[in-house]
Length: 378
Image (cartoon, rainbow, N blue to C red; front, side, top):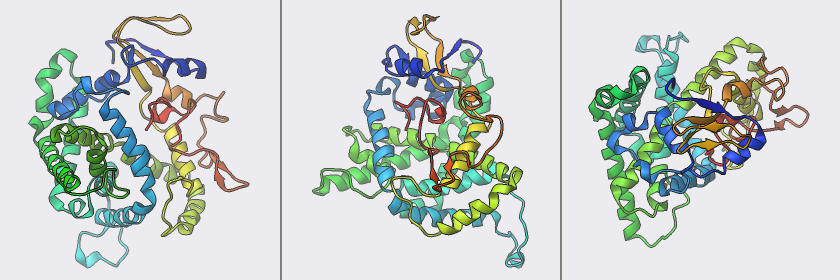
């Protein structure tokens, strides 16, 4: 990102004004396009740039599915998620040798690859029906696509902009793994649309999965265009949860004084279905949020690209082509916002007297910009 200026804006008043600027002035999509290399990663299978943005059909459907359908179905899906996590973890840590099973031996694993595989298996239950999610070839194709993305990121980050058009296809392995997933999403979308056409319901079903909800909610009727929305959301879901889980495990090892309380809470909620209000397990939620606050990660949040010359509310002039962003790393460690900001306090976000959450990991705020700007946070 050395080819542009990044102007940091952190005050609540400035952020409130900036988030109401239209995408034609400050574009979040263009900034994300550059930050996540979506053109190189998704290629011709991405939603076209002219069909993105807060006013687009793709944005409306994505937000509707994640904020409404997925959230309202958490309770119904939580049992399947818990079972899948148990099975996926067992696949990673169970002894390879059948003669070692039952002896309690430890098995060495590479943490990040193992977590990516675990949460990919869980993700499949959210994106597809159970039969499709259980198909070995579906898992293999999705995890291969994710690994292609992971290998491409460092290559693209180190490649000068003028060379990216020449390098991007090679970095993504000529798009072979991406094409397999896209073709499968087209197949599933066609199934959903065919079922919808042959049935009498007009509104999206209460239960189901993400690919189904996208196809049912959208006004689009082009299967290829709908599958591109699903592919974009699948790509967006790949890495953030495994990365945070990795840092949580690190912090549990570094701060073992929290382990007993977290275990007691986990035992209390064993087998309990999680509700759509997202109030369960406040101590674990706080531990995850505090981990996210202090973990290494993006130094900026909610970047927006200036599409024309722009003057901020406090008079700073920014030429076109540069960024306005929230200084995430600095805000998360600001002593004026967080008492003892440099110290890890796992239960910082719990009201100890009531045993309830004061704020949740998934709650966006100006002080906790992990999810981006409030207006655009999912």
